[in-house]
Image (cartoon, rainbow, N blue to C red; front, side, top):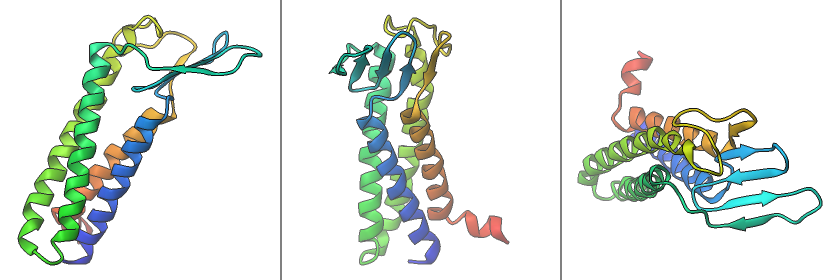
Length: 168
């Protein structure tokens, strides 16, 4: 195993951690207008002036449910790819499946990123597909997920050894 595959494995692991962190936080869509509402894919939190924060599991629109399933599938694929990359130290024939599993994880993450904004029509947000209302923004969890996609693409460049060609 060469240094490019090790670097790719590191980026793959970092992308996995970013995706899990983004899923665990209710900061995908943030509305600080008249109180504070933080929407996530697994939890929604609301805080009013002088009141404690209340968090509940929201009824997700079908688009967000699809995005959640895509992200969970992507996390499982990246975790499997990381395990196979480590295992390829002893069994080199596992390198090829690790590459392709990470590639499919990247595709699934991209599908999640495209599906998520379709759910902005939900009543808690009040927008339209791909359009948030005034005073509502995507939150840090969504940006963390986008970083996850960038890290996954970077890992692919290293694992498939495209980076050495680019660096020449």
